[in-house]
Length: 131
Ligand SMILES: [Zn+2]
Image 1 (cartoon, rainbow, N blue to C red):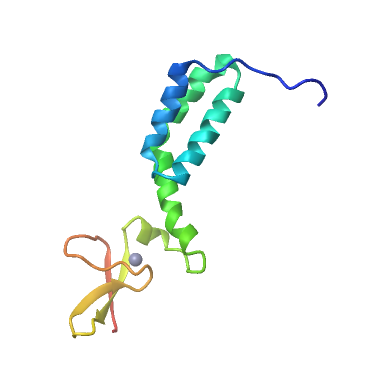
Image 2: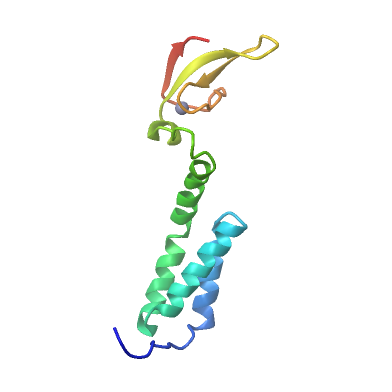
């Protein structure tokens, strides 16, 4: 690993613009900026003949990256809390318990993830009672 660092020519404007556009799907702010910088750096570092394929990959996976980033956000904010069970995150199965507000109004809330039941908003109900 000796020798000078390989300096590549800048990628074509169209590829850079496509990579930047793909990050618009991400939440605005620091997360979007960080991914944008990383993806552009990888584009710059890739061999010129690989850049078009790299850009197509970034663009076609933009929505998947968005979902992964958005799924990660609550975990990062609540690192001391248990993580949500997968069936809750996919909204396939919740364990509903009955709770009461201060004024006595009763409502259903998942005992595992804290999601409140809204009529027609969930499939896979398990009613566990309690209060
Ligand atoms: Zn749940």
